[in-house]
Structures are given as structure tokens and as C-alpha cells.
Image 1 (cartoon, helix red, strand yellow):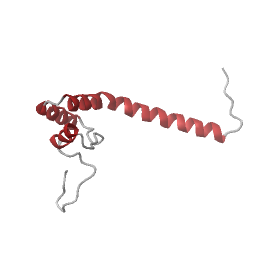
Image 2 (cartoon, one colour; image 1 turned 60 degrees about the vertical axis):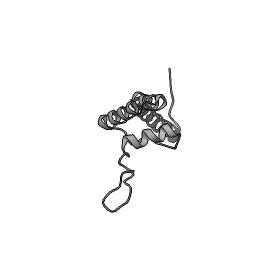
Image 3 (tube, rainbow, N blue to C red; image 1 turned 90 degrees about the vertical axis):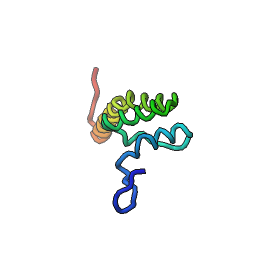
Image 4 (cartoon, rainbow, N blue to C red; image 1 turned 135 degrees about the vertical axis):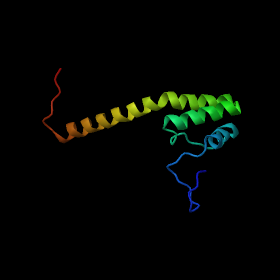
Length: 97
């Protein structure tokens, strides 16, 4: 847990990589959402390798691989939702082939 000077957890800063990998190892709930920078991803992967847990290494590696796809998918979904809204608001809209 990352704690600021007042003693409260900062929910936008990822916890130390070793703490997250330990949670993966013990089967406790964890989130990789905050590990977005290359540095934080590298620290996470290094911690998984240092502990030597295959499940942790796989989870981190999949996160690193899938993150760009997730960002792309979210963008595509937003564009599709905007297109659906535009089409639904315009009764004269016609799609031709």
C-alpha cells in the first residue's frame, strides 16, 4: 500500500510491485490496472521473476501484452457508441452499400 504523508492510501499510485506479486502468489485479490508506465511494468515483471512464481509471471506478462489491445478496444467501443448515438438521433440516416 502506498501511503502519503497524512497516512491515507493514494489510490492512483500503484502499490509496490513486490506487494502485488505476493498477492498473486497467495491468491489474494489484486489489480494490475495502475501499472501503466514502462517502469512500473518492468518493476512488476522483475518482482514476479524474483519470487519465481509462474502464475505471477504469466499474469504480469499477459497484462503487458494485452494493455495496448485493451486501450485500442476501448477506443473502438467509444467510436461505435458515438456512431450508434448519431444514427439513432437522425431518423433520416441511411446506410447504402
